[in-house]
Amino acid sequence: MSGFVSDAQIVSVGEKGLEGVLRLPSGALGLVVFAHGAGSSHRSVRNNFVAEELGKRAIATLLFDLLTEEETLDRANVFDIALLSTRMIEAIEWVRGNPDIPDLPIGLFGASTGAAAALVAAARAPSDIAAVVSRGGRPDLAGDMLAQVRAPVLLIVGGRDYQVLGLNKAAAEQLSAPWLLRIVPGATHLFEEPGALEQVVALAGDWFEQHLRQAGGGT
Image (cartoon, rainbow, N blue to C red; front, side, top):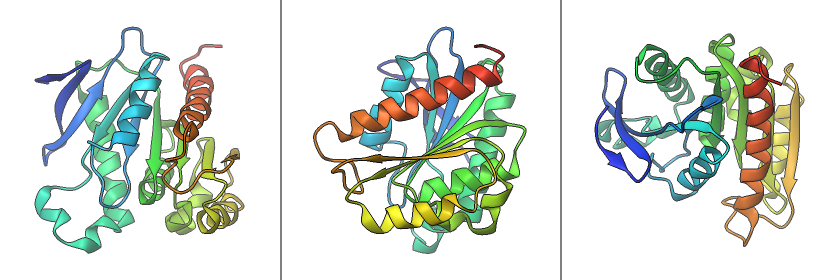
């Protein structure tokens, strides 16, 4: 691993060398891999804010580009949930195989279409994933894989993100894993309203702390 951005290390993930940012606080209780939404990247301001705040709770994070620059030129790839979930699996394998990263319980944090990729990855690697959080996500795009998710799922939706809220409610009913739907009052899809993203951080942080500790054998 090479390079630093503040407390973050610039990393190259998987065989395709996808650019990413790894934050690894001392004494980390778990590691959360992020899946950004369509048109975003590991530089997402919102996801980096969430990652920095999780770091204050001793939760390590990995944000990375799910596609190469060439792949992003084909708009269809941005919505290819099967491809994106494969990249999530490859990132998890990269984490597990990296001698510089402790053996930690893993959580997944997905935003928008990335939430579907995270849920499909959780379904495909049930023994590897301790918890999933969706922020303004499209879990419905995970389709039949929702029923195969075993990790507890937290769905966070803005109260004014009406269409996505409906989709989340319908998708939640297809989950066989424990799940919780939390609505941030007055927030729209990107949680741009004052204090909205801070509420996302609080909800996600509590969820990850609880389930990563349990997976790690803590209380």
